[in-house]
Length: 92
Ligand SMILES: [Zn+2]
Image: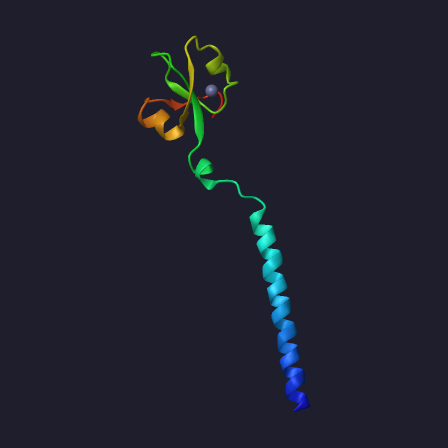
């Protein structure tokens, strides 16, 4: 009977250790809660000029600095599909 008691106590100890492991894992996973929807679709910059043909990775690109029109922030998919732009050779 004593043997059975020890076994159940050991089992309880193991259960506690597993629970503690789950708890610490839960804390770790909650830290970087950055939304993944942003990273799947990258944002690019385009010049609203009718002569512009490229989309840019950054606003600071020298290809964009020449733009006399409005600089628009669009998704990369829109830049290629909607605005018919190609990747800028300077920043891509
Ligand atoms: Zn560029």
